[in-house]
Image (cartoon, rainbow, N blue to C red; front, side):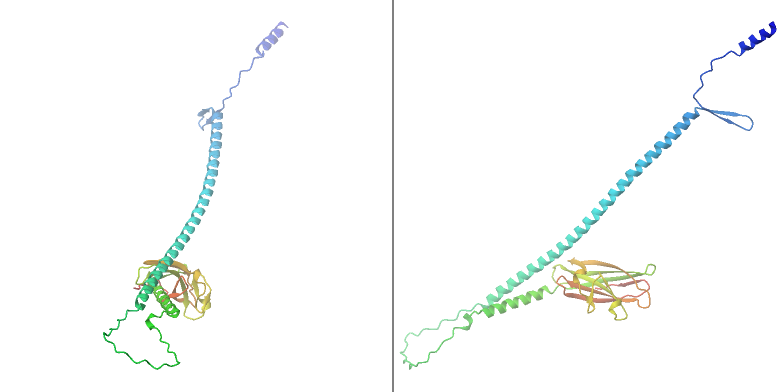
Length: 313
């Protein structure tokens, strides 16, 4: 019995309650090879947390930069639109300025020529003084003529009469001469060039409007290009810029491509090429003055197969 009690006390003493040790918060990653080799990676939890934090930070930075990029893109698009509108307005104002300057120069030249013609006319119409008759020293008494009831009216000299009709006729002559001088605005077409792009069925036309007037005054007006086929059906014609037709010519002159030149200006048009049963065979260039008067009409052939270059002088 004593042995049994002794064994029980010994067993209870060996199994006495021991305070558990504090567990470590660190994780350890173990890699075990085929041959039993063990590789330990300590602080695995810290590495996982750092990796997740880096991914989150990178994602947030990318989202922030994308948002800023979108805002800057919208701002750039709006600024480009404002710049394009400003350039168009500046171009239109420049064209209007050139047209007004040309009109001012033409008006000044007409006024100066009219004044010079009027002064020359007045000088030519000035009556010349007549020589005085020689007085006789010893005149004989002439017999008195018989009196009659009729009265004779002596007309005044013709040179001394100035009527309103003469002045009006002179002014009309001066106006006609000034109009003739103003209508001497002559233009010419140089370096006509046409290129047919068969891949895109596109026709590109380029030509120069040259100031061919004898004076150095600028010439302004508008120009059109009409693509014609071999047939005279106006329904198949194309007008550039677009305008309604009347008697084979544009009726809306203000729709034409404006120009104001002292020497020359290059005009370019781009049009779809009709490659079918009724292709375009010629291009007619029309040049009008600012008053709508036709200054020049010239046709050029268009042949398929590449470039159509016709240098003109």
